[in-house]
Length: 113
Length: 120
Image (cartoon, rainbow over all chains, first blue to last red):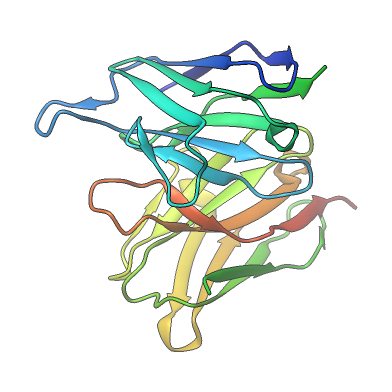
């Protein structure tokens, strides 16, 4: 199974700050045939189901604010929030979208100071 | 609009089986695939399996012997059945729609989940 490792486990920031969180996979998520990376990011707020933010490592899902940016390739990926808002308080999960079983990281909890 | 809604028993006794129904609206199960994902209280997400629009299924190998996913397109319902439940199967169980885009498994719409507690 592909193991997804997220860091840090929690992050405390002030509104308006730039935030970067990391996701590393134990195997490459790059499809050599089409050169696409199969990595997704989700946001989960308390008491709610996860919400898809990014797929294909960098493609923003429809309706997701452009302050959310996904980047990276192979085994190293990053989610950046350019200017954190109060409504971004949540846990962020990355997901191996490359091969079965689909696996998730343990999450990065974003807290506001 | 797209909606998914899970319904389940709430409480299941150890060693018994679990049946959950996911009722969808706003899209066709013959066109879209559906995943099942669970989340133990205070913990992360675990993918259980999926059923494709054509009806074939894929399962998490760790749970495959205990899981069965099926559907009824005409009723817009997807079914999850799990056998031999233990206390560590206590979790919120979600159904989620797979992105229509080819090659991607990611989940673009989720139900609110149904909470399952395994206890005597």
